[in-house]
Image 1 (tube, helix red, strand yellow):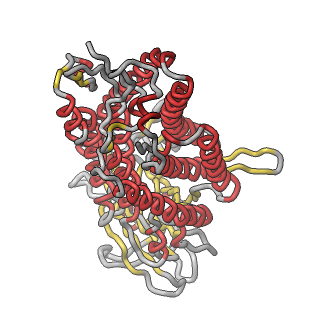
Image 2 (cartoon, rainbow, N blue to C red):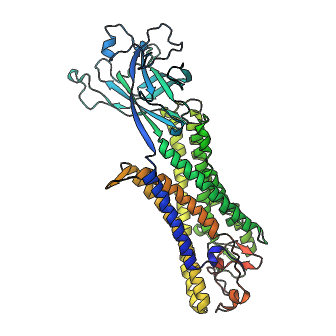
Image 3 (cartoon, one colour):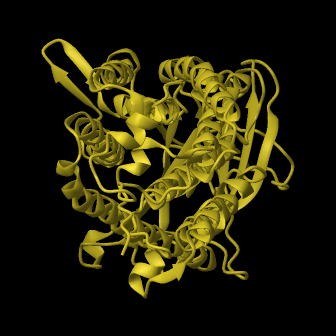
Length: 567
């Protein structure tokens, strides 16, 4: 009887496969840590205060902070008073990038945060719940002597969250408030060499626009973009991994279709996991080098969401398919819901039929679907809108903040429920395997060693799964609390880059190992080996309540963990 490869593979061969995968895992971390630069770069920009004294400010005129066509500038706000320059005539201009530099499509995206330098004045203090309203224009060009082309023009409101730690007395006038940084702009592609921002702060006392926001001295921006060197390493990894996962996926499904039975749920889920991993791997980002595809960030989020939803669903179904039961003429379904309430007795055939359909896991997979849907809606409300308005942020309004927090909280609750389900199921599987091991001494030595090997391999795969999840969390925490790189002698290790490439490679290797180890094996066990060597009474054998069965019965790994005894 043919089983899965993991069932028929010797411990020596399994260790060899594990060693090869471990070598590739180490290489994935080293590629990011030693070859790739840091994932992102942050650049500070100080705006230049230009003067636009035209009567009609609505007509497009781009004010350059430096260069041959630079604008008429003032050093500070105090200089505007003797020159009778009004607040509506001042334009804060920022050129991206800095002089003698240019942007590149390899940077992939641009994210900007804004810092306002606001001075304390007794007659112009920041009111409670103050909101600054900016009139922002964004333009681009690909030649230093070409005309600017408008890319976006929006009114950008932002709520101020500022505190003044000193006493509000005349001697402390001129000191700056401590203000939180504000989200400003995000663009999902860097298709042009030069960008220009013109920021106006129009004042209208009748409409209460920019009134009670203090005296704004300067506007600072911090631009964050992906490093071109890291992008090249990342693209190379995706290009290498795409055919690797695709080939093993085709090979796996070919083996499944060669069986004399239709594929069962667990096999379908493993195949779907391979498809979702291939979907992530396909390096469509190469096209972003030649095309202005601003939707690439949103598309990347959707791809990751599909994979992680599929991965979480696989873990639940994998554990559920390996839950054990004691069978007589009726069988007990031991699922999460029945374990928390009461056992349900149904015929074995009905149990197997239900467990071979995703609907049998709706209580466990339901939280995954709800949580994924909430995060998808949140992402569409943020990055979906940014496709047409790069200055939009859902966090800038009270309604948007409450809506975003609601989506995140619901997704968090669903994630907690999922992990409660998963931990319970993993505990049940290990507890039942340990309980069934008491039947092993009654077997012949050869058969006992065979089953003990199968138990070891099954536990090994479960522990590897937990190790992968733990490594993801650990490396994420390390990347957040470290400075981004470690130095050992003359060697600099980029921790953040190693985290990205290492974890990405790890999940590819995990999916690769699943499809390889759980593909049907070409080896066969005869009837004498399958049943005759079992030194147990007739009708008594170890099995697991899975639906992976062949025309002549369950596979070896599922026989080993379910005890069927005649009452």
